[in-house]
Image (tube, rainbow, N blue to C red; front, side):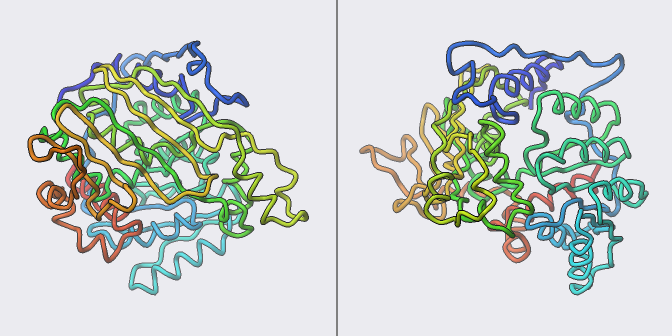
Length: 420
């Protein structure tokens, strides 16, 4: 695939991140300055002398990939078990601010016949002690969002590669600092975007790269997930960390689930790049309405004011004239969807299409179809099934969450590190 010059690589980060709300909030306003016709200037830091990009830099080959896990709540504990069953991988250390979670995760690994990992916990600085170990090659981070930047930077500075749940950071200067830290330490920093490894998403990627849709013109993805009950739960998100983000800023907190597969199909940073982002949001209504109907007045959430719009929409232009629409809504009653739509000059694929949907989504491509009628995409998914799913689909179904895509993400990461 074609390489992007260094200046373009940094321009795409500046353009995409500095002009909207994908990673950082846009304050209390209901639309970004770009959406209102203005422009947010992007400061593009210069590389230090001798500093080079980490794009396409291979790993040193590892016989066994040794993983340390930071964050053992709902997500991290499950992923710790996932890492442990990937061939050529072992979990050597686990860490959580709550020491009982580290013990619980270690006990579960032992119960499945795995070696007991070292346990760290008891404070929000316990991770720093874990990072001193010399038997960790890859650090996986699944803590609340506000900790990702500091923990990711510390792990790279300690000589570890890092894979972190989204978002990687929440402030623009933090994102630039992580880029620089990765380049300076020569350690990879990866987003654990499991949705890029879904079976439909990877089939769509293969269809796009083999020209089924002609010239790609636009994509539409999102994270539409009714989380209201979980957001107000006293146990699901520790200290209500996720709900509290809705009191801090107007932002598309979780856009990457729908955006990343579209970006991959468009070869973003591999031939195309994002140039402009416009963001807008509805008024915040969903969380307050849910609280009014279902949450007792004694609950601490009644002291909160929600500012994030229920639906946050980002429109992104690319250098090749494409448009991506990325949406985020976790505050409204609606069926789950990542939308996952890709269109071009010869056809369109759409996932999550409601009553018309099958396991493979729906499709309309020329010259196969006509009459303005959607067709089930199952046959196309079978024809364009990605080699990863052909190779490890059964293992993924038996070992991974979210339909197996968690395992595919973990398996590919480990095998890349083993191959070098």
